[in-house]
Image 1 (tube, rainbow, N blue to C red):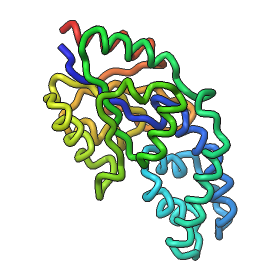
Image 2: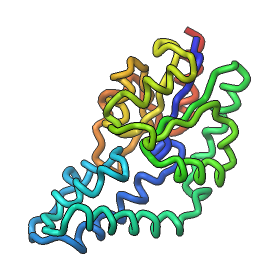
Image 3: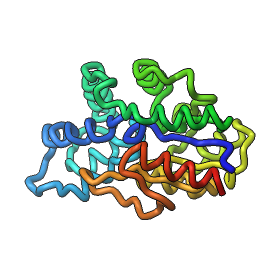
Image 4: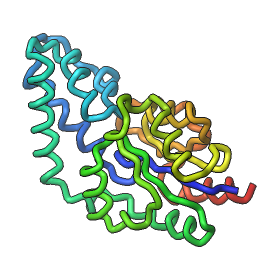
Length: 222
């Protein structure tokens, strides 16, 4: 029986990963110092990475001679501007409420384990009206190394008082799945076809929260 469900946030609870990904192309182009095309495979290196890690990848892709600190400052401003203009309710996967209801009915603990900053997570979950449904929120602010390091998932399990064999993680990115698997978790992948993302580490896949709920019900009944 399941005792905990742990969700990634960006790309799972809300479709923020794709929103950011589509606009990153222009950001990279604005500082690019070579004429070589950047392939979708290359840009997909950013998927699942934290805000503090993305600028280093952007610098590599763009070939920019700008100092990394300058790119970090510019990217933070880009990020803040982008998400200050997003209505999260329009990209909220509201069918997660079915999973929340099932978890509450069966006394399964709920957590978010995200590489994002606490302020970003809290704002999104509050706007979407589900922040209080989670027993625990763990953020990238608390760790020196982000996913794929499994520390965030190990900490989440310890804080919930649940062993890995009685929990499941819902992830969309390769790095997130690698972190969850490193902590011994079963992984349900939220299917992503618009970006090139390796989701082969997932034990199960779902095209939406309804399909993921079906997997959760099956795992809980085992």
